[in-house]
Image (cartoon, rainbow, N blue to C red):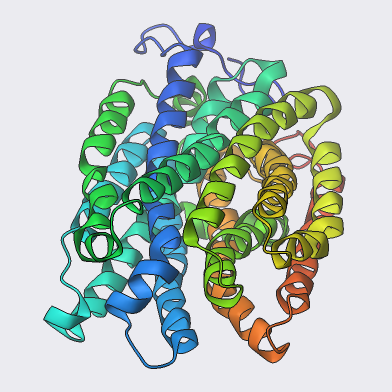
Length: 447
């Protein structure tokens, strides 16, 4: 590699310097990033999938089901409050010591937290200690997730051939729909048990399986070498003593743009998944198997669209593709809820396919879109904070959407309007990202 290479000409294994350990093959790196991300999102989504139908009655019981559900959603929010902490901690590790070590730590922490969730006593046997322990473990999940996305996406981009940066980033993002498929599939299977069995022990099985799944991801990541691009930064520019402080000094405005751009991928997504499960089962009175099955089909559509959007972004640019995705998201906000309100299973499936489609477009390109915002020495931290500061807002969205539904007398226009606002904010962020020059171009590189 040549010092000062722009982000558009990413490092490849052939670029590694003589005397350094040979770099891993790009395919191996992407596989490790993708599988680790998929299994980490499996753990993270399990909580959201079970929040309304399991955690609300078992850990937050009460006479009013709406209050119980909001309490469960607030516990769900604990992870999102903790995610910026993970972004700072693991961003520091990733920018100062290397991407691989940070990603090994995130997947280990997630596996431990999720497995312990499957062993927790409920409110009936442990009282107030049960929801407190659940919320604490959810916060640990958030810390792990806060360090995951930026590092996994950045590792894939830094190994990617120059003309496949968006596709490689999208391949990592494909871990999200796979995680959704795994989590909803697991809960759908155990939900086939008699209700009493499901509520007493069946729901625990998908959480306990985490320890095995995370072991696979840990082995894959341990056998991946550090990226040549990070090695060059360490050998030429040198790493920064405090990456987060350097980021806030150099690029606070770019960080704000990154947060806005990522908002749909966090806030919009969790309204359309976690909140939607509670809305369809508790408000519309539908059986949980209908929405879980629809989400499973929607996740397949998301997986396909993620890969298609990644290819399109390499051809037309991530900014153009992303802007189209955000516009489509805004236009579909109300129709998606109208389809849910029909209570017809076929229409619910169509609604979930439309839900995951535009989310996939914006989610697929977000890594390639915002990585140009940040200087190379603080890129892990910048990408992680962009994703996870927006996640703080996202964590409260299921509860806010439930409140908006109550204020609108259970009419779906309340949460649909909330989606429109979120979509417009992210659209503005994408437009701003398209206009600013890359942080590491000669004209903008910090002196």
